[in-house]
Image (cartoon, rainbow, N blue to C red):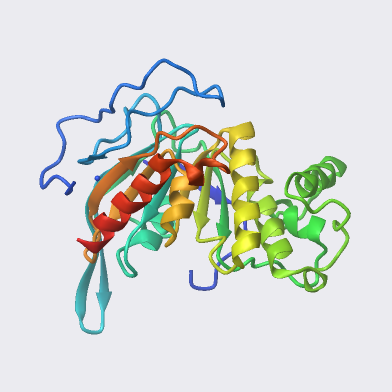
Length: 306
């Protein structure tokens, strides 16, 4: 039985080569090199396109096992996802890209527990049924409550349970400082710019000390400069805290900047068409001038055009 999950955000009103045609014999992963990166973490294997090669059961925080998702519509049954075999390692940053309608958001909703697989299963290794998975979610829209201050919005997971404590406000203020909102803790969302509101939303997703952070295009609506700044901050925070992260994005450069692995989805029904390991040193703010960065972006673009 999959464990309960809880979400660090407000409720939503609405809300690798080709994938193998058969289920892998076992979950495995390429051996990583032992030489540490500047961030202290062993690098991934050389960047390449490989068939679906999920993380081992021992290190995975979550695993999709031959997952299929179908929806009943007025015109019949639609298959959104087909034969998904995917795992996310603890402390790993995974990005997923693909054409509109390929099932990216459906994957996220399955992770949240908002949807259940039609076939296959989602496993949380090492978790018991009553042991909740701590995860945070940040959406493309900030979804801050307009009548609450920024620090109150950040502590919303506790406010929704009817209780907050002094240490909760202390953490909210620390998160404000972490994301560049120090001095704006008492402001209302309407008093902040769009980029600042998105920073507040990102801070709220970190409030519960997430084991898994789900990012549904949280930087997509921002202007280019603000987007670059927030992406750099998001990478810095991830390097400091090392939670697992799952990013949905339409931006190839954003995926290469942030992710250890980039998963490419095919058009509906969504399948894993390719997986690209990103072996660039961190932090990656200056890596856009690296020829390997450009090669990865071009490779991912080719997969999307197939």
